[in-house]
Length: 348
Image 1 (cartoon, one colour):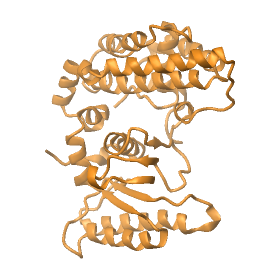
Image 2 (cartoon, helix red, strand yellow):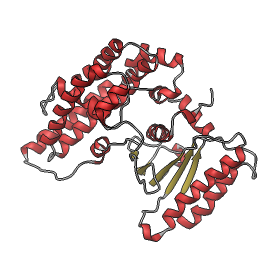
Image 3 (spheres, helix red, strand yellow):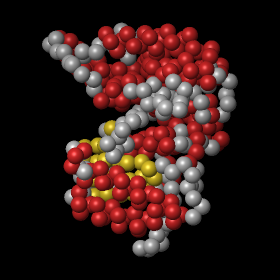
Image 4 (cartoon, helix red, strand yellow):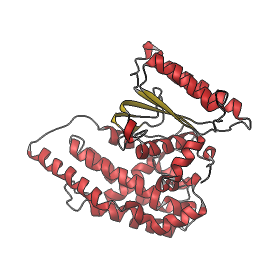
């Protein structure tokens, strides 16, 4: 057990860690939000949750907020004051009627800083007192705080998430991930069952000539470009800065093929669900089976083989009843589609 240096993540990747942990610890349906004005939230969920315990599970509308401090002070006091001020600023947004924000039933405040445990005077108790004050004003049913110590323990218990974020990966983790990447997906049968259900819904939708105007949230999430303003923009720039220029022609060509597939099925809700399901598989499999090799400075030949064996081949197996006519180039295009939108990075 160790406290991880979460400052190495950066603001946006810290948000991604929190979103991933929330999906694992609170509910798989936690909905993350991309870069941009967040309306006082990094992620939300509505419904019954497996948190904080089975006997006292939350049930309602949850808002999750992540507060990242790039350079925490050596003295924990100012860090705690900063965090409390951040909480106040966000919760004041809910109290501002002109914003029209939906009030949460539950609120989870997270941060990369250490909160001191001293009773009453410690920064953890001070932050809890602040949330208690706002809870009465907002009629919160419950709230919690994940600070550095809490997040570190959650990461201890979630190997796949810890390994997915290369800044947290130890050399031992990277080697282990290369050896047992396949083990991270022992639930392949369950995934195949889920895919069969989606395919059945697509066939029924086609038989009844159902049409859909809109984009489901999961597909919208992956379609959103989440680059920070200072980051390299576009697929070409991202591959070049990562030193993967040799992948560029493949990436551009297959990304275009996948974009055409998105357009082809834009009026089918079940098709959007299938494509979103597969994009989520690409995202997760890349971070579990490929990124550790990049973090370990493996050769591009090794990385490319892992892309094929750990990402493309297993996803191809999932679409055995290929109702959307997805071929190898379009499946590969999903990877570069996510890269271009900054959901996947080839650098650490």
